[in-house]
Length: 199
Image (tube, rainbow, N blue to C red; front, side, top):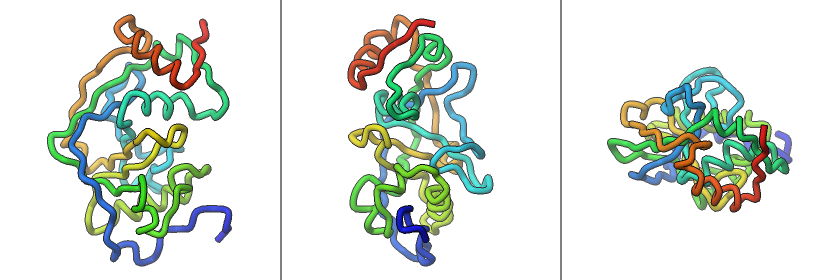
């Protein structure tokens, strides 16, 4: 194992007690306007994507700020966004018809599992994906993973396994470029010192 990288999930993880947090609250998600907000990805380059399509993952934010910085802050140091990029996406509120059971990686739960904060921040994501698979396979059958946002650790995000999909419903809040969302968008841009560029 390269000591500079996060360790692999322990062989006995399935026998360990998971640090579980149960949450019943609204979530938010930024997504392309032409697609449903309830999209569980089986492929791609995201942090907790299944290594071999074992499950799908839906990413959500605890609040609208988290969604913005996790969506548009991926290129660290580039704090600009174009009007056309905003016009292509909307923000939706996602609610659950039951409480969701998450593996809590926001604090002491990391140490309980033999992990650390690199699990939710390290690039590339290969090790994190193997951890996500191991947690998905755990006998406790968690609904997903609760973790701190990489680009703003004061915010919280969730990766939901597709087995919880039937419990979710969504409502589109607004297109990010709409007049109805202008005040909220302005506050978010100010908070993260993002500039809005014309096309």
